Amino acid sequence: MTSAQRAFLRSQAQTIGSVVMVGRDGLSENVVSALDEALDCHELVKVRFQAHKDEVQSISRELEERSASALVSVTGFTAVFFRESRNPDNRHYDLKNLCVR
Image (cartoon, helix red, strand yellow):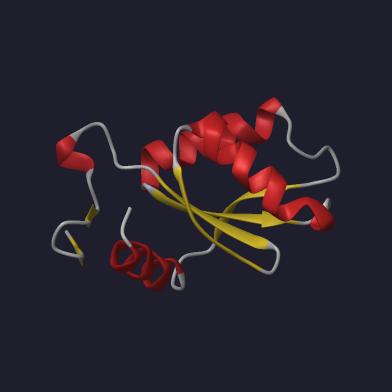
């Protein structure tokens, strides 16, 4: 992913709310499956850390690997993930032209 694509996705993420929360259980299978489902529906997803705030970077990297997504950014206690939809009809973001469909 290029820096221009990351910047575009970061700008788009400013208008969306957090869909997945990491709580006191940390990185559980429930968090991974919730992120996977959210990525299937929305492509661009914010994850908010309510606990384990000292491990935001490491947990975000592991979530990136386990969900087969791209970690767009980590700001404070919020991480943004992107995974392009497998179905071309459900794609919301065009990363080649940096626009919303």
